Image (tube, rainbow over all chains, first blue to last red; front, side):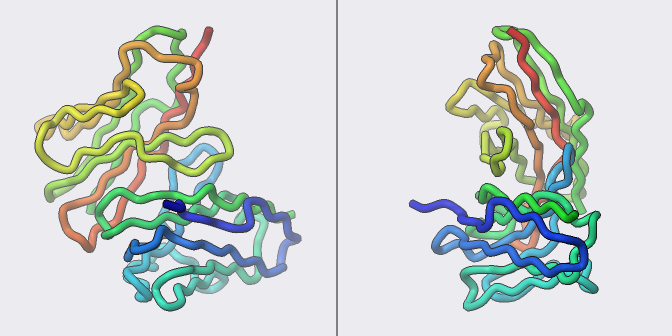
Length: 113
Length: 114
C-alpha cells in the first residue's frame, strides 16, 4: 500500500513569489491534514479536511495561504506571496477518521530567501 | 480542547542505557494517545498508540508506553537504547470524538552516545 506522497521534497523561492505544495493521501482515508513544522518544534495544524470539506482552518493565515482538496482526494496548499518567515517544513498527513492515527508524508522543506 | 506537554527538549543517553521520555496531556474528555518518531529529513512515523484496553502498549522495536489516567501521562520507555534510536520523538493526543484533531507536543530529541 502506497503511503502519503508529497511533492516537491524541497523548494527554494524568493520572497513575494508564490509556491504550491501537493499531497496525495492514502487511498480511502477521509481525513487530510496540512501541518507546519518549524525547526525544533512539533507539527502545528494548518487545516484539516473531512473528504472535500475544510472542517478546521482556524490556524491557516488566510491572507496569504489557501488550500483545496479536489474530489476529496488530492490536496494542494498554496502560499502567495511567500514571506521569509514561511520557511519551514510543510507536512501532509491522512487518516481514516479525524481522531485516529495519522500517516505522514515526507514533507516539503520550503526555504524563502 | 486538548494539549500536550513534553517536559524534556533533549535527552542524551549512553548506548544500551535505559531511557524515559516524558509526556503529559490535558483534556476534559477521554483521549487517544500516540508517540511518533521523526528521523532526520523524514516525515513522522507512528511508534505506538493507546486507544483503549491495556494501558501498557508496545512497539515492535522495544519501546513501550503506559497510559496513566490519574497522572495524565503517557511516558515512553525503552530498557536499552541503540544508536539507531537517535531521533526526535513526539507525543500526540486526540479525543474520542471523530471531530477531534490530533495535537502534538513540541518534541524530545533523543541523542545516543556510544
